Each structure stands twice: as structure tokens, then as C-alpha cells.
Amino acid sequence: MATSKAAILAERVAQWREYNPGTLAEYAGDVYAWHDASIAYLERVRDALVDAVQELPGSMPEDAWQDYFTDIAHEVADGAVPIMTHRVWATFADLGAWNVDDEGLAEGEDGMTRRAMIILYVVANRVANALLAELVADLDGAE
Image (cartoon, rainbow, N blue to C red):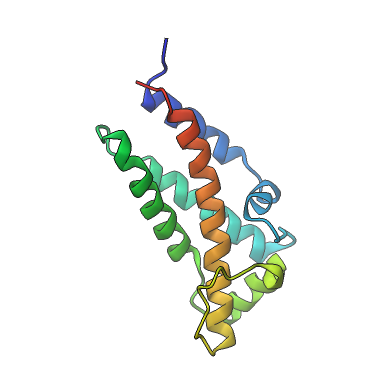
């Protein structure tokens, strides 16, 4: 007997809420959850994703899920990046994000703060996509 999508979603969201910043950092790769700035950042990404998926439309064709989840990951990542320069650098340094590949997104950017913001976007996007991949795997075969 297949489990409903709503039940799967509720179970996965409950699991995500239990993920600590260290676990979230592992999903991002190449970063650490050392102190306040990195912990708050990773938790903000997780919490924004939880809020976003709880508003999923009930009836959506399965072939539309991937595009929808890609949009959610982008919105969560974009919304997580700090705006204030000192917050950008505190978060970047606390995550140890200097090892993160910018995935070509910073090409043509001259400003160091802008490049740091792009790296923070990449980190948040990795976390969101990894968590959403868990959800997609759970939803395969659900009613």
C-alpha cells in the first residue's frame, strides 16, 4: 500500500526540522557550522525550505515536480543570502566558505563582497537541493 504524498511530506518535514547545522553543512559540502553566523545561516535555509514545501500544491503532474522544486531551491537560496556587508563576511568566514566552488556564477564579478554573496547562494542552493532530493526520492511511487 502506497503512502499519500501529504503523509510523506509531513514525515520528511519533521525529519528536516531535526537536522542540526552540522548535518546541513554536510549537505552543502566544503563548509562548517562553527559559530553563530554559520549556524543561523544554515538554520535559516532549512526553515525557509520547510515553509516553502508546506505550501506545495496538492495536485501537480509528476513531471512538473522537478521544475517546481528547482524554483523553490532558488527562492530559498536567494532569500537566505545576507544583504549587509558585515553579515555577508561574518557568514562567509564562519562557514569557511572560501573552499566552495562558485559553479561559474561569479564569472565577470569584480567585487569581493558580491563574489562572497554568490558563494553563500551556492551553499544555500546545495542544501535546499539535497533536502529536496530526499523528498523526491520519498515521493516516487506515492499516491
